[in-house]
Amino acid sequence: MVTSSFLNVFFLVIAFVPSILSAPATSLTKDYYQKTCPDFSKIVRETVTTKQAQQPTTAAGTLRVFFHDCFLEGCDASVLVATNSFNQAERDDELNESLPGDAFDIVTRIKTALELTCPGVVSCADILAQSTRDLITIIGGPFYEVKLGRKDGFESKAHKVRGNIPTANHTVHDMMSIFKKNGFTLKEMVALSGGHTVGFAHCIEFSNRLFGPRADPELDSRYADRLKDLCKHYTVNKSMAAFLDPMTPGKFDNMYFKNLKRGLGLLASDHALFKDNGTRPFVDLYADNQTAFFEDFARAMEKLGMVGVKGDKDGEVRRKCDHFNKLNV
Image 1 (spheres, rainbow, N blue to C red):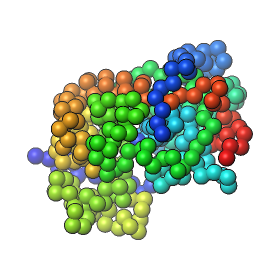
Image 2: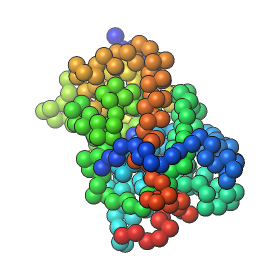
Image 3: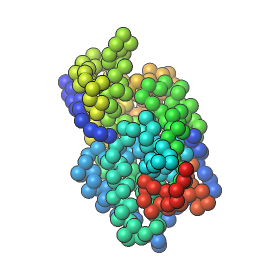
Image 4: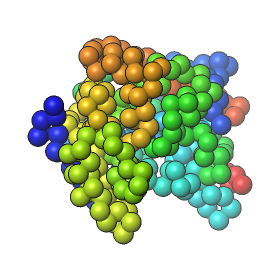
């Protein structure tokens, strides 16, 4: 029985989480900047703490941007690059248009501070990786090690996004095909999906579950009614959104998995994890045991941060995170 507290389906009017396996030739270390930029960790931590206090959706948004970055061409900050007259960049593909501005802003803030302290040293890819970890811990999530030394990629192409990023209506099979080519197991996919314990989705991403002849009867009926009321004008106001976790939307915990078992999964892809016989045991495990979820999520995030990393030969340290140092077409 779902209590009335689930009705906290807060809404937000806002402008907003080919793959390459980890590159063993690139050596990352946790103390990479110890000599060249000793205040790196301090600057990142202080900047994200201030930003998260100012805008509480920053943590969820940054986690999503990090995931989108790593799953296309590896963790190389290519998602941060802006489109120019010669090239449409990743962030302007339809699947990335809703990536939240606060995530880009926090990287810019950190990069600006670091360029004043140790110019030309710290990559945007490392900034995104470290700030994601620090923000997750701020909102209650697990601490995990972030190894450093990534370089920023030379390419960012919008046309490469589709087919490499999971979508709201993907089946477990669809999602697993994307995770598998990045080296992840089924269990790791479910653990990383637990990142949906924070953040939000626009109504257009789940409207097919609410309206029309194919509305999903497996959504909790009261939850569905509130979502219908929230999203009734979604075709006009495309910024309307609902929290992915209506119970504890600002806290990193295992409530996402508990919600799935009660018909409170917002996206079709979320609900699919509970319905599928292969993924349901992991949903049950994480719903019952937050410690198990945190441990598996932390390990999966460490692994995610190693996907397709670039070294000195195939990357650079950008002076500005949204522009290549040299024009790349």
